Image 1 (cartoon, rainbow, N blue to C red):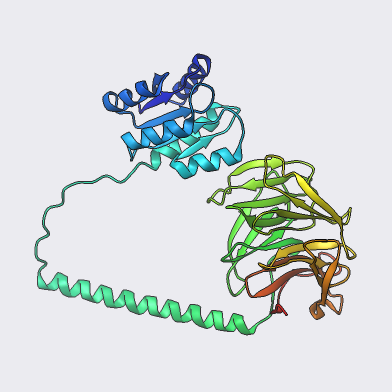
Image 2 (cartoon, helix red, strand yellow; image 1 turned 135 degrees about the vertical axis):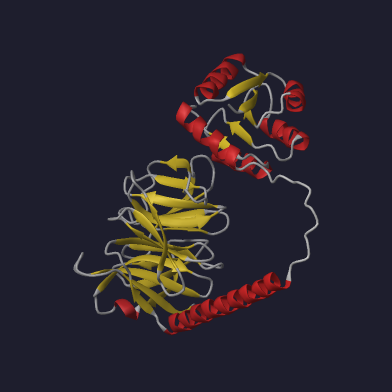
Length: 379
C-alpha cells in the first residue's frame, strides 16, 4: 500500500480527502501546516504528496517548498473551486496533477495513480563497461549502418511525399460532414460533426490522429493561449489542455459559433445564425468585450494570419478581411474560385503561416467525401 502525504489546513476538508484517498487504497499521512508536511517528508518518506488549495495556506507556496525539499516527489493539488487559470499556474510550477471539485473517489484515484507513474528518474552507480569483443563490435557497427540506411530511406520517402503534396492543392478526406478547420502551429485539424471527431492531417492531408468525443458533438476548433478550444453543437464552448487525452478544464455555455480564432489576446467567435462577430477576453466567463454585425452573408470560419482577422463567407464563397477597429467593415474580399461550380459548400478556414486552407462539404449533402483545399498565398 503506497503512502500518501497530505497537507490541508481545514479539518473537515482534510478528513474528506483522507477518507477518499483511503478508499482508493492508499495509506494517508495528514498534516495541517506546511512545517508538519516538510517534517513528514523527512521522516515518513511518502511516495506522493497531496496538497489542498484554499483557506489556511496557498497551494502554490506549499508546492514550491515541497518540491524544494523533495524535487522528484510527484505532487497532486486539490483545488477549492474550478479555476482553469489557477490549474495551469500550478501545473507550470511543477504539480503532476490537479483535481478540480467536486472531489470524487474516481477523480482522485485517477490523478493519484497517474502521478505515481510519473515519478522522477532514479540513479544508480554503473560499473565500468568491459571492452567488447571483436564479433560484438562488428555486430554493433552493422546494426548502426542498417539503422542509418533505414532512416535515410524513410526520410527520402517523406521528402518525396511532401514534394508531391506541395504540388497538389486539393485532397479528398475520409469524412463527409465537415464543420471546421484549424492550424495548431504544426498540423491541420479538421472537424467532422457526424463522427463526433477531430482529425489531424500531415503535409499530404493523410489522417495521422483522431480525437473522438463520446458525449459531445464538435462543430469547431481553435488553438491559442496554450489551450485547445472546441465548439459543441449544444452551444457549449470547451477549453482543453493539449495533452494526449485532451483533458477538459472549463466549459462555457451559450457560445454559438460558426468559427473561432485567437489573435494572441482575444478569442474571436462567429455566430452563424445571428450573423455576428464577438471579441472575448480569456477570463472565467469568456466575457464579450465587443459584438459586431457580420459584413457578409454567413460566417463559416475564422482565421488570424498574424496581422488581420479573416472570415470565410460560406454563401458568398469568399474570404473577408476585417477592419480590427471596426470588425463589421470589410477591408477586402477575395473570391474562392475552387467553390465557383457549387460542388462544395465552404465549412472551415485555417491559416498555416503562409497560405489559407479551407474545407468543403460535398453538395448535395452526404453524397461524397469532404474536400480540403490549399489556396494561394495571402495577397
